Each structure stands twice: as structure tokens, then as C-alpha cells.
Amino acid sequence: MRYGQIQEGGAQGFGAGGSGARGFGAVRYEGGRARRRGVRAALALAGCGALLAAGCSASDGAQAGPGGSPPGPPPTGAASAGASGPPEASGPPARGSVTVSGEVAKGLESPWGVVPLPGGDLLVASRDKGTISRVRADTGAVTQIGRVPGVAPGGEGGLLGLAVSASFPSDRMVYAYFTTESDNRIARMRYDEQRPAGQQLGAPDTVFRGIPKGLIHNGGRIAFGPDRMLYAGTGETGDTALAQDRKSLGGKILRMTPDGQPVHGNPEADSVVYSYGHRNVQGLAWDKDKRLWAAEFGQHTWDELNLIEPGGNYGWPEAEGKAGKAGLRDPVAVWKPEEASPSGIAWAQGSVWMAGLKGERLWRIPLKGTAAAAEPEAFLQGQYGRLRTVVSLGGDRLLLVTSETDGRGSPEAGDDRILTLTVR
Image 1 (tube, rainbow, N blue to C red):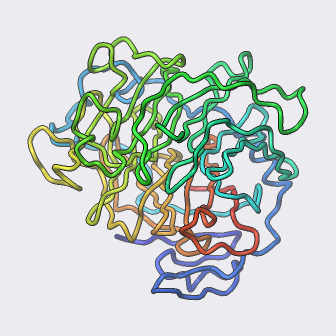
Image 2 (cartoon, helix red, strand yellow; image 1 turned 180 degrees about the vertical axis):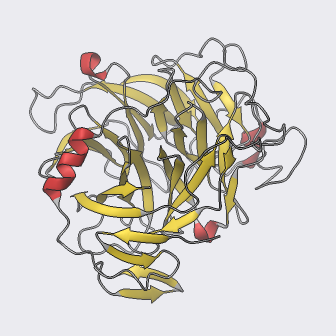
């Protein structure tokens, strides 16, 4: 992999080693990995608030692609074994940049799902506490709005992904994916800002239940697509056979109506299963042409970024990485787990941006259509520890959420954080 030069608050360094990260404190090494000692307090909250307030529009682009539309033929030139079609005539530059432009909030406990609200504030889920909090864009103040009843945290389970309905300004519905004592499920709750703090979430209305749960591999990312349908990434809970079992909801990407019903035109009638053969999907994002991309954990060999096509079989456990087997979709990009262990992804500036947990870095994957335009680049390596979630705010702005308090990190004063990034 080639590591690109980064820009962080005006200082320049190199993502591979961290030695050039002036302005983010001294760097120490633990087990061969760069770890930051501290983050300068001079990150501008006011400037960050302005960024957030301006940045909650949906991504641009108007042409429908296979990811966000009812099933249709694969993209022109896409091979049956994976997304290796010819690149488009133009694309993003091979090398990009990242500027850390602000700190939205700090002191968060096990943050996982994050979703912007109209006007720029954020909702943040705490995986282990089972609570949802609102973060003020202008001050960074964090206020709990409610607790999701029935959440049973443990291992990699708990309160995971968040989404707001496509009609949020009128219906005020917040969707949550969470682990219970018996399953993983999706519920929606009405958010009433007129009620007292901590009591602003209405009773949960379960729209979908029965997703397998486990100590590991619970998936958890949810998002509304350009088609206004609800998508969910699930895991196979460590039972690898579930990924290839078309009747199981484990190891899948699901597509359903906002009420939790199968969408007319899904690959199989009366089924919410959109794609299968996944190990543990935790990242979902659409590009400007409304193609759906997903990141997932590999086992010991390869983590993956996949272009998702309806009815596609992404190989697990029969294949890990680029296997070139007939009937299986190959990933567009792969990484060794120690370099990635991917979680959330977002699309901005012609690239997919992918958070790495074990890899403790942010990956940029420049795209030309359905293919990678250049080798992925790594940024912020070791600067903030484990990285969980990336959210696009439109244009060149991203949110990045750390995950040092999830039981597998080395939390320091101020962890966990939500940062604003300017990217190219």
C-alpha cells in the first residue's frame, strides 16, 4: 500500500509512521504501532459548528446505479466475479489529503452510530450504555435524550447503528439497530424535543427482528438509501454457515421499507435479503451515482471493500479476498486485518473513506466508476487510536468518530472524540 502525505491543522506528516505529526503531541510506539499521547486543545469548536451547520445535505448526483435502486443489470463492464469494470474517463487524484479542522465532542463512552440532524446537531449512540445523546454543533455540549429499552450489551453487541427517517422533519423518527437478549433488531422511536432531557424518545416500535446475535459479528450499520429504503449490514455471529444460508438473516445486507417489509423488486420475493456471503458488514455508503459500497471484516487474511449488487454472493466462508471464483463477487480493494479491521465508511470527493479499528487509521480509496482509481492511502495512523465511524457532511467535509472506549482500545483523557475533517 502507498501512504499519502497528510495535512493536519497546517502540520504535515506521513500516515505510515507518524513521525511528521507535529502539532498532535509526541508519538509513542506500543507493540509496533504508533499511538498519540495527546491532542492539542486548540481545535476550534466554533469553526466546527459552522461546518456542521452547513453540511447536512445529501450527497449529490442524480443517476441511479445498482446499489440504491431496485435490482437491475450490473454496471457496464462489471465482471461476474467482482467489480472490475473499466474506469470512467475522469476520477479523483491518485493522492489525497486530510485536514483535521475541529473537534465536535469529546469524553464520549463507546460511541458507535452517529447521524446528523437538520441544522447540524448530531445524534450519537453509546453501544454499552444503550443511550442516545444529542451533540450541539455550536458548543459541543452533549445531552442524553433517552435510553433504548431492551438493549443487551456484551462483546460486540449493544446499541449500534443509528439513522433518521427520510421524512424526519415531519415524522421525527429515529431508527436504531441493537442487540437484545434474543436477537439483533431494528426499532424506531419518535424524538420529541419538547419533553424533558433524557425522556425525549418515545416507546420503541420494532420494525424488524430476528437477526442472529452473538458475542461477535453482529453487524449493525443502518442507513436510508437514495431510494428512501432502509438498508442494514449484519454479521454471521461466528457461525460461518449463516453467510451462505439464503434463509438466514446473518451475514447479509438487508433492504426493507421504513416499516420493515421486503421491497418490491428485491432479489427474492418476500425477502429482505439484498446480498449474502458476508462475514461482518459494518460500513455502508453510496457514491454520487447511487452505487452501494460496503466494508466488512475478513478473518485472518483479507478485509474487504465491496461494490454491492442485488443478489450478489460475496463469498464468505468459501472465499476471503479476491478469489476469482465463478459465481462469487470479488472485492474492489483488500487489506490485511492489522492494517484495517474496517468499520464505518463514507463517500466524499470521489473516494470512499474507511475507518480502521485495529489498523487505527483512515483509508482513502479513490474510485473511477466501479473500480479503484489508484492504490488506497492511509491517513492519521496512530493519531487517535481505533476509528469506528465516518459520516459525510457533503462536499469535502467528514465526521470521524474514535472507538478507544469499546474495551479493545487504550483510552486517554478526552476519549472518545468526534472530529471534523476536510478531505481531498
